[in-house]
Amino acid sequence: MSNNIVPVISATGLFTPAQSISNEELVSSFNQYVDNFNAKNNKDIASGKIQPLVHSSVEFIEKASGIKSRYVLDKENIINPDIMCPLIPERSNDEISISAEIGVNAAKMALERAARDIKDVDALLCACSNLQRAYPAVAVEIQQALGMENGFAFDMNVACSSATFAIQTAADFIRSGSAKSVLVVNPEITSGHLNWRDRDSHFIFGDVATAILVEAKDIAPEDHWEILGTKLITQFSNNIRNNFGFLNRTHPETMDAPDKLFVQEGRKVFKEVVPMVSAMIGQHIGEHGLNGDNLRRLWLHQANAGMNRLIAHKVLGHEANSDESPTILDSYANTSSAGSIIAFHKHHEDLAKGDIGLICSFGAGYSAGSVIVKKAA
Ligand code: COA
Image 1 (cartoon, rainbow, N blue to C red):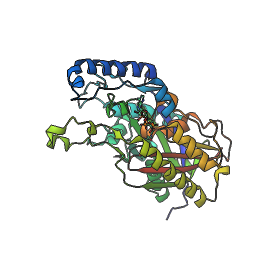
Image 2 (tube, protein in one colour; image 1 turned 90 degrees about the vertical axis):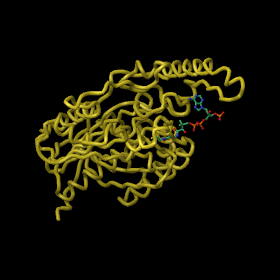
Image 3 (cartoon, helix red, strand yellow; image 1 turned 45 degrees about the vertical axis):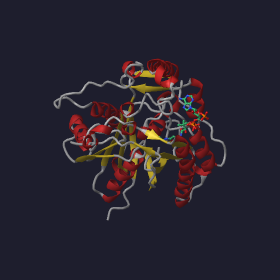
Image 4 (cartoon, protein in one colour; image 1 turned 45 degrees about the horizontal axis):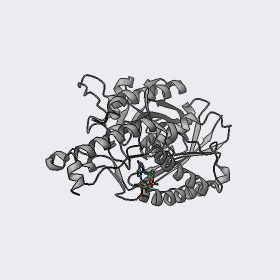
């Protein structure tokens, strides 16, 4: 047994798309779409056959979610009121796929920051909500694109919790001795599964890719984060769901139905997930003999600023400031599994040796993952 091997986070990487859509731009395009729809359907609306669509609002979005803008891969088509979705040209099988490409970008940054040669990486996990195809695994494509000659790669999807579930998987590989260096990659092209015509959710998501290099402590760079413990939970719920899949074509009449995109009962998610996650974190830190006072920083899943305020308050025992629970939601929006990793990536370098923090994600499933880390140097 080699279960005294300590897994650590050696480095993280981030790819941010060049284009960003502000709430003002998003709402202006959405409202134009609403006006066009209502004008086109004015007779059916007047007769009561169909309901008119209603405008969205910048004030609502910021107040309800904390989101001010989001990065995307194709701004022009998303904010075109006649299109309202990204149009990403299909690539030939000889070209790298777009998911793999942005994943490779984030992965290269993590490898560079750890000064790790890709040839010494044993395993690669592509963990995200938004896998662009069934197979071959995007992870294997990233493995080849990076020049990783040995080892294995596979895809995994636990929705917004994919990154923390992959960190535990990587840490378990390392503890068991089946790998020493595991690259976790989270390419999240969320704009492809968001219904940009749905007033309740059109503002929620953004595109990004993150990467996390999880390694055995004895090979890690001096400046790393020890993984003190991981905890994962799941509990079935239909409140966040996306029925898109390759069985859709067996029901051609429903192929384009709105439930083949992201749908949620946002209010219910808020109410049910906040207590579930607060309890999980409390239990997890308790299992490690820790309490809220021992946590220097929380890097929480970035879905809603209000949810994070409540969870952080419950865990820390007081209202958290932006130093204790940083947010990246304002500029990135919800980036699914990547959110807590972006928060960690951008807000960890100022911490001191011995500081303890917690990375936590939560989302569809329901699923939630918690990772307790300690700064080593
Ligand atoms: N612009 C203006 N008003 C809007 C609007 C929009 N785009 N969307 C909804 N509203 C209105 C609603 O019609 C409703 O009006 P009413 O009170 O007259 O009925 C009101 O705003 C409140 O809507 P509600 O959907 O209850 O808002 P909310 O405060 O719950 O905020 C979310 C919505 C989605 C931001 C919030 O519920 C949330 O973030 N939940 C958690 C989601 C989550 O974590 N999901 C995980 C995804 S991975």
